[in-house]
Length: 133
Image 1: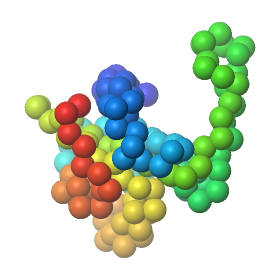
Image 2: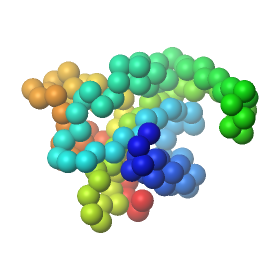
Image 3: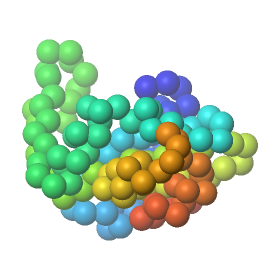
């Protein structure tokens, strides 16, 4: 995770603490930042897509290693009910980001004539346009 994505991720986690009611009780997400005009579909890897889709339609079991001494909260978790991509365009003064359901993202990529998504297109397919971050 690069610096801008890590900063967005930290702010997003704090935002989620107060806005969880807007999402399923259990879900998994991927955080992405965009520098420039378009978010390339390649930025979401096949592995990330598979995990998000599986979390939405089945379940994902994730384990956390105690070996690294990272101070994990628990040994693992089971996630189901949702898969989201949180995307933020890095622009001066931008406090808006988009919560895009994985199914909506996949449907968009399958229909698109290009291999990326613009900010306006992301806003249109987003289930939630979020502000104040």
